[in-house]
Amino acid sequence: MSAGESLPVAMRAGLWKSIAYGRAAALGIALLAGTLAAQPAQAHLQCVPYARDHSGIEIHGNARTWWKQANGSYDRGSMPKVGAVMAMSASRAMPLGHVAVVSKIVDTRHILIDQANWAGPGVIEHDVLVEDASNDGDWSEVRVWYAPANAMGARLNPVSGFIYPAAPSSDDRAPSGLAVPATQIAEATPEPNAGSEALQAFFTATDAKL
Image 1 (cartoon, one colour):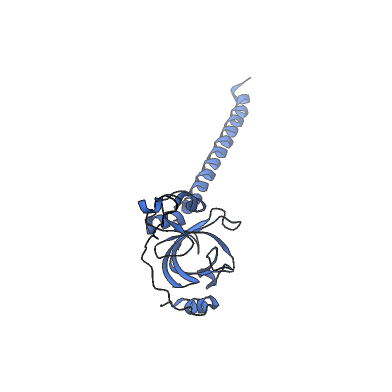
Image 2 (cartoon, helix red, strand yellow; image 1 turned 90 degrees about the vertical axis):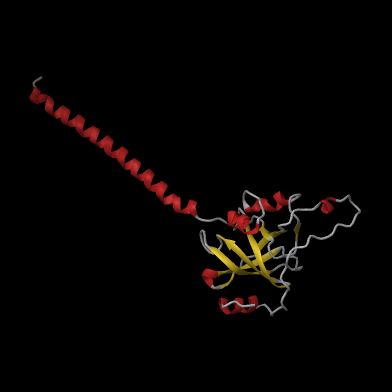
């Protein structure tokens, strides 16, 4: 076979090699694009690190695990106090739960909270209205103001309770049958109940002043 007859074979080999290189390059670009696209989501501030930093409560892991993890390390209860972490349970809408820090007591059925990652990915909010929506007034279900809609959220969110920053003292571990003093935490004086309607549409959509 002459050199002239072998040229098409060489060209075909080069063509297949070029196609293979092209496919590999396209795959590499796609993988790089996927990695870059994922980075902003990973960089968003989640509710857990924000609540931990803002409250001083050193608990790690998904928000839904905080209530159980706090047992024995921090005082817990059903009533909100300033500085406490409100621990929301897992639900269909919130499979990982949610945690937020109580910033003010408004009245017996309303508080303000500081939180992250509720109004949008990584968004930090201060003094957001929360309403006790439970039948028994025990804060087992709440509604939360949703800033993008400028309205109180319609969804009922289950709450495990409130985790207080002070660790249990030796008195809190006293033998059964002995009176255990309640942990004292700074708490805002409750304002008179302003008659809800989601606290007058969150102080007329939030030129909030108390």
